[in-house]
Structure formats: C-alpha cells, structure tokens
Image 1 (cartoon, rainbow, N blue to C red):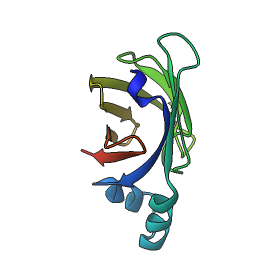
Image 2: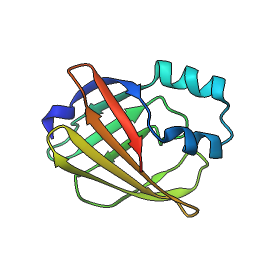
Image 3: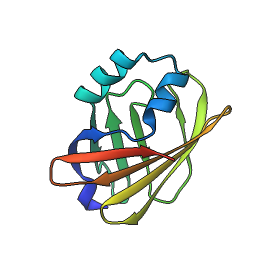
Image 4: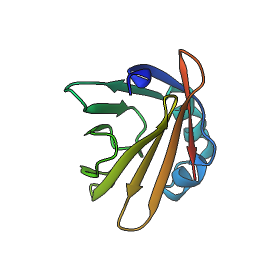
Length: 120
C-alpha cells in the first residue's frame, strides 16, 4: 500500500479518452487535462488511503480501505459505489459502479514520479 503514497504525474491515459468523450470533453481539452493531470495518494488513518486528483471526471477526493466497497459523489453529482484493489505493490485497480456504467481504472507506477491510468 505504501508504494502509492505520494504525488504522481499522469503520463499515459490508455482508454480514458472514451470516458472523457462520453462526458463531452473535446480532444483539445483532453490533451490539456492529461498534460496537467496528477494523482495524489495519502494515508490519513491506519489502513485507509485517500486519492485526490485534479481530473474533472474523477471524484476528486476518495477515502477508502483497500478491498472494501465505499460510496462517493461522482462528477455528475450522482452517488456511486467504488472499490480499490491492489493486486501488486505497483498496481491499484479502482472500479467505479455508476448507475449508467461501470468504469475500471488501472493505476500502475512506472517510476518514482509517474503513473499510468488505463480504462478497461
């Protein structure tokens, strides 16, 4: 769990363009979002993680325990359920169950400064 503690720059976004296009994000906006996108992970309590990001389609601040389902507010103000799993020290899988769709985002650490996000 501790490997993800820190602030990460998003360096790739395989498949996320599909999600963003569904939210009416233009190609130009997408390039700008990815260029400045960050993911910050902290551990405010024992066994809890907090993810914070500046991506508008992603719930900005989620606090959770690995492997336990939690509720949060989505970008369109609907309540969604999410679960974060960590199959390896360098990978987290964040599944978001929106009333309309299911989004799975794989975060994988590439080096000490960057992370890649892939939508399944």
